[in-house]
Length: 135
Image 1: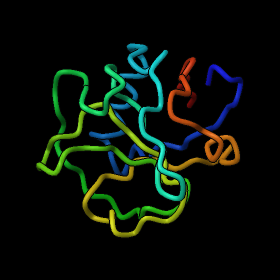
Image 2: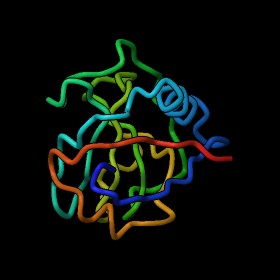
Image 3: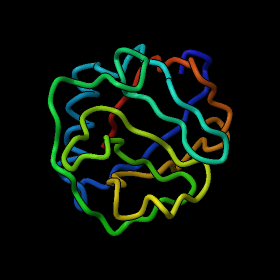
Image 4: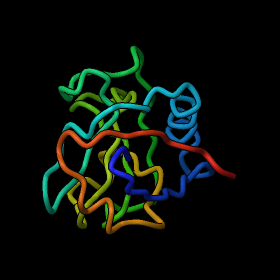
């Protein structure tokens, strides 16, 4: 984050190869660098991944929905989409609290494993400086 706050996400590559693979591809292309968190709802989610900052933008393509066994628990990382099937692209969110009503409707493809206290401080307009992929 530009504010110096760091958090770490573990990706579920085995269970969500399409979604996690798409996220990695976008990270490697530096798609997310400089984007803002355009939606933050306390007690629910912090969402980013829209190059327009409006909540309506994306990468210019969509990916298939991908069911995973993971639940929308605090720290879960999911891929946002419209109400239409197979409409996810680049927008992703982190659950700030459990949100089980989302289970089975959106793909959980990772979880925050370090720095959740920093995630909880994210505000609308906070900017991603850089995302780094580590093995």
